[in-house]
Length: 470
Image (cartoon, rainbow, N blue to C red; front, side, top):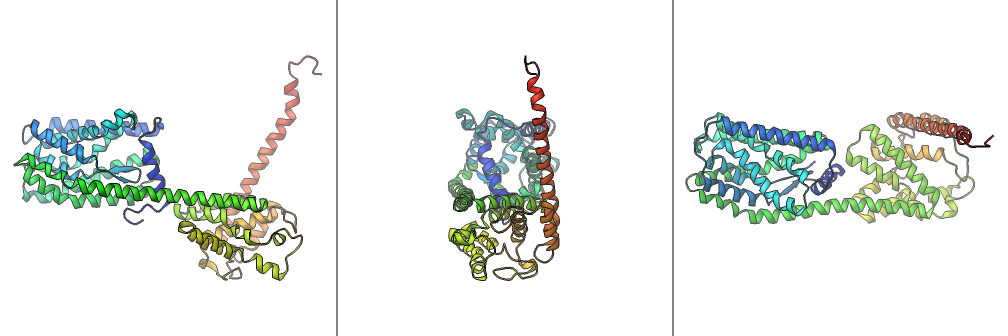
């Protein structure tokens, strides 16, 4: 994934989750426990640091007020990253490490974060259950404060720059561990999903680090100069709003594409009921195969759309050909085989994601041996999405009644898949599809047996306790 790119379905789901989380009243138990552990852990660490570490200067009420005012304002500028947010707090956090007793800064940061959230909490826009999460958001301050205290560098000086670099690295590590732990345990999101997106956050922090140090050098002598950091907030606010608008549009567009795909699927079903039902069956099988193969979210989405729309081009095929009793002649087959090209054309007109899906639809009748249509692709030249849809489409077609032949049994269809494995179908996909369809038959048989047993037991159950039932 490119830095700050949210073009994958998983990333877009995280964006939606972040927007919805704050206002959600009820939370899953795992999320509540994770937030509570994070908050308690931070409060314990921050309190011990403030109580046990030496202070290089007394706490100044004026300096504290300046830091809280500047920090609270800076906290109003937020950039969404995955399902959470980041703030340009480096501009005030770094000066605070030297304007205040360094060991107290984590607790001050926590107060500033809560002050920023207070208006939304009071208005009910954010649930009170989010308070532990806000407290845990201050974990990033522990690492730098600890490094500076242990290095004896609480008095600002440019000669300490190597220590400040180490402190920044500690900030990244503490924040990274806290964020990944929270997303993993609280949200159930793999760290592999979050990690690429977080690189944007730390790149911004690294860019703001020199400016924060410059302000710190001036503010330790003249505390009022801290308010200089409010100047960049105007442009940062504009950038944050523009970026959020772009992310919202990306999610909305993705939702629109999904809605369009479902609408087109409904159009197929309205045009021909059998084709619509067949497409849904192919969709379900294809998704199961994609999951079994462990495809990434983007390819899984491609499989989903391609399977749902693989027969969209049949809308342009005359109905007398689609419903013909008996085999098609060569001329009719030529018309039928154009449905993949017609499908691609229709989807390219839709644009965006659906335009790329059109390529998978076009190749959904290619064969591994190169004897398929329309382009005669072979082997790995055929996209994995198309190979999946091809096998699932064939199985579904073989196990349903057609105008020119009755349905095959599952065993017969599996036998055909095996026979054509390596020539028409990808052997790896056949190997995955076979147990999936076999398991589906077992489930259906079990459900049928259960209904049969219940039906057989029903008269005796109903008859119990009823006078004259015999």
